[in-house]
Image 1 (cartoon, rainbow, N blue to C red):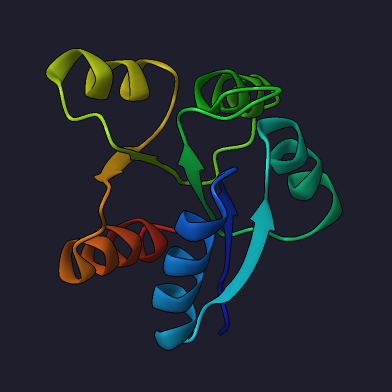
Image 2: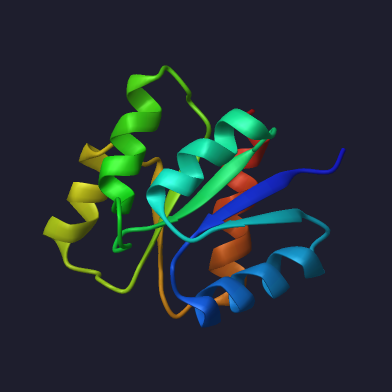
Length: 121
């Protein structure tokens, strides 16, 4: 079964790197440049997981995640963030994200976390 992963990130380089890493493993990838577009994507297509950048224009990843969770949608959401302080990571969890991946991505950790949450579905 092919899984679709939404990358919600406004940075084109981050989008490209994550997309290539995911497609190499056989995932279908969709891209959203803002949190609002990520929410719209959930309405318009089947998404199995979201990789959500924390800092985006229009609507940041925390607000987008809170909105998704308030709608009752429990799709796995992994924060993609450059910040690795305990308070930043705790904020990701508090906003409803399942976990986080620190940028720059380490290939093995990146895929281990994705597989962990996709297997739970």
